[in-house]
Amino acid sequence: MDSPSPSSRARVLILCFSPLERDARVLRQIDTLSADFAVTTCGYGPPPRAGIEHVRLPDGLTAWKLDRPLVIARRFRRAYWKQESVVAAWKALQGREFDVILADDVETVPLALALRPKAGVHADLHEYSPRLKEDLLPWRLFVAPYIRWICRTAVAAATSVTTVSEGLAREYEREFGFRTDVLTNAAPYQDRRPAPVQSPVRMVHSGAAMPKRQLEVMIEAAMAVERDAPGSVVFDLYLTPNHPAYVQELRELAAGSAGAVRVLDPVPHADLPAALAAYDVGLFACPDTTFSLEHALPNKFFDYVQARLAIAISPSPEMVALLERHDLGVRSAQMSASSFADALRSLTPERIAHFKQSADRAARALSSEEEMPKLTAIVRRILEGAA
Image 1 (spheres, rainbow, N blue to C red):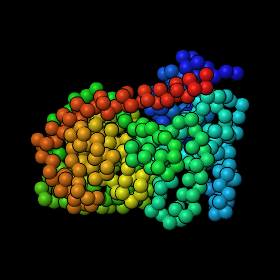
Image 2 (image 1 turned 180 degrees about the vertical axis):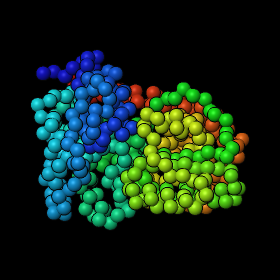
Image 3 (image 1 turned 120 degrees about the horizontal axis):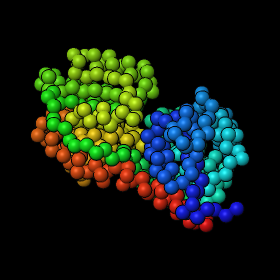
Image 4 (image 1 turned 45 degrees about the vertical axis):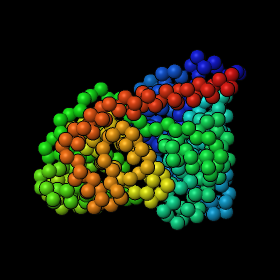
């Protein structure tokens, strides 16, 4: 059977080992591709979008439950095909045919290739996976070689590849030789105007509660600013409880702020734009303890732009490039509480108002409506190449 022409409803599988209804990047892929193609999703949790066929993987499976003896013995192919998530997805997708498979992150790429879509596989790499947890010695010794095997043997065989920032794309090409285009985590455009700066200034951070992100740096910085000028700022963190014990540690730290800092439960994804728009400044201090963190260009940066907030960040090169190009806010000199506090102190109400206006001017250019058509074009190129 020939591959469909790009103008027909080609069948596209979006394959991801995550709860899709909570994965903002995958939700944008679904919304974008379903406008032009017959989309099926495969992953954890309930259907992420009404009207989209969904192949649900059994709850409770672990995507990275590797057979340790096999990995130590460098029997990577055997280790991959023993993973319970891979086995479950392989069984669930038997008998189905697709024209293109979009494989989200490295762990899905060998499976996508084995399913033999008619036109090809697009690999979307959310991180620089070979160095994702390079701060952990066991991970560097055992897991990293396995991921590099996937990159050499599977990702290199994909029809096309994208990742989230220029730094990650350059490193994939340098280490593995395949070309990697950039598809950022830009958020959908929000039709709103900058709100007046409030008193006290309201600051916000939203994201995952993971110790490696050192969220305490932002809390300590905000507390330092509040001590210097009582009543000048409030800081709310909306955190997903990836590590409940860490969330509790952060709440205990924030308790010393006399209410100026609050650690709150996460906001549902659909409600996040309105929640963020109630603030003045979006914060993200990101350590460079791994290559992926050093070159992070996360969802929240773009969420802050769409909320028309001023932005305060640590000196992360990918974020700094956009911040300075669009005049969106301030950066600290170092990744430390004292340096980040200095950056926050420089945010006068007048400067915050200026940066909010800059965010408004940049919101269209930094939206998913401008970014995601790249993905549609990629799928069309794959289909054209197989026609």
